[in-house]
Amino acid sequence: MTASASASAPSWTRSTGSLSGDPFFYENRHTSPQPVPGGKQPGGEEFWIYYNTHRFSGKKLVVKPGGKYTGTDKGVYNILVWHGSGRFDGHDIKAGDFHKDELLVSHSAPSSRSRWRIPGARTFWSSSFSDRISITDVSR
Image (cartoon, rainbow, N blue to C red):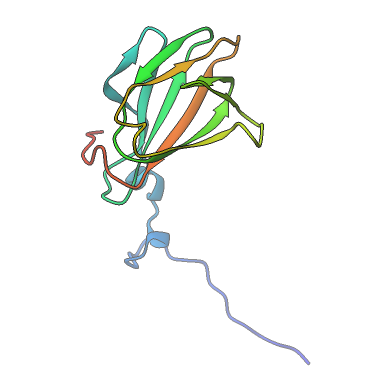
């Protein structure tokens, strides 16, 4: 018993109206990190990494070895620690440690200033995500 099927490669020259039919998918949808206005301090800097949407937002925080960073965010958000270790408002944080690499910042905490302290010799970076929009129009 033999089966025959015809298969064809997608045509990148005609628009199908779907995302998968866009030959310039990356160029048309990539969002490069953008500095957060007022987010640069001697110890570190924040960047928008998810923006231009009304569904969620996200930032990347980079803190230099031995650095400190103080910031304020509105609303509930979570923090994922990707590289390095340190302290966030008195809590130990460490990338790769199942018990210390993710934090949920509750409603009352974001309205006050959050303090990051990175005593280690490695650059620290984390990302934070919120279901509320902090910024919706970042010019590229």
